[in-house]
Length: 451
Image 1 (cartoon, rainbow, N blue to C red):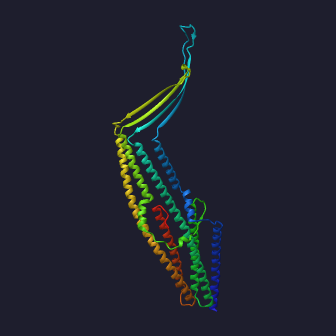
Image 2 (image 1 turned 60 degrees about the horizontal axis):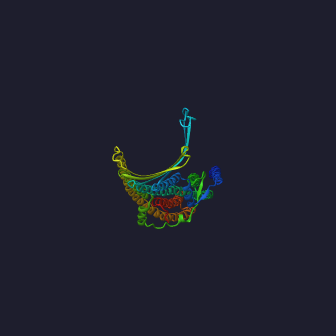
Image 3 (image 1 turned 45 degrees about the vertical axis):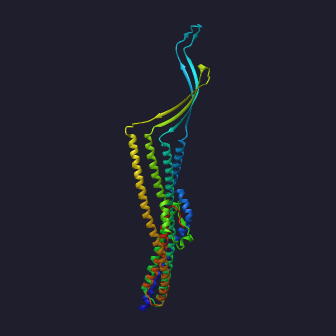
């Protein structure tokens, strides 16, 4: 009878726990339904990369800087053309005075007179020699254009790196959600087995309690995975220009065996074409060109100017009278109160700074490439190891489940093996996306997409 009483008590506790589990399942179902009602739009990685270039402020700003640099080059080219000015003129001269008698005719003439006139002045000015200042200005403008183009490429790949990481975060969290759901299903199945063994008298009460706790933890992990997924998809939506969650669409290429990269060729290519190096080199060229431009002030300047002026007034019956003028001017400034020397010295300092920046960019790129290559190699090995670990854990779970049903293994040991499988699946997902993120970082350094 005592045995039967304990069994009834245990059954009552199971009923209470079953109610709690039902409530938890309803809450999880409501969260799932709410998430389904707010089902995010799906996007591919290529579409995400395209959209982020249209909405990322740094990319838009870099694109505007490149347009400004193009206008500066155009302006530097136009400096070689003569300057033409045309000034139309219209004047009305009015004088007031006393009336007087014409000594010849004897007629009284008014002292108020007016003399309207009009004319046109057309002038052309062309610097013949300016110490090659215009040549250096054009060279500096072209270098700034190259720097702006490199900065635009760099900002594009920086934005691409951010959205790629966000894309992989969303995709990884969706797969982690699937792992947590699979762990929850295993926990539910294990609770059923433990409850059946308890009712048949072959199991222990602690087995069902342990299985119940494990199921609660699995459901809690699933809720956390849902929250992480919502956060990742919201971040992805912001980066691609949406005010809602955006889901990441998986691609079979993400799950293929990573190809081997020619690190030697990539290193050489990066030092030749990396946006950071191109920008630093262009800034150095521009600084040297501006230094030469400042030194051009020591040379004399020769200007050629020609003008034509036509005037007509009331006094000559509005007949246009033309005048022409041709001037060749030579000017030299031997002393500027040390202003010219100060400008040259400041620009020389800018050249030294640009050289130091270029050298530091090369060292930084070398260090970043070394780190990226090491990260890729480690991630590639981790992927293969994680795959083997998942296969081994799946087999261990299959064997352990049979052993528990036969009563030769405790539920604690079974739960540990199941937890090892869950962790192995998580490790595989993390290893794969760690490799993809490291690859995206390398693409940002090199300035192009890698196969």
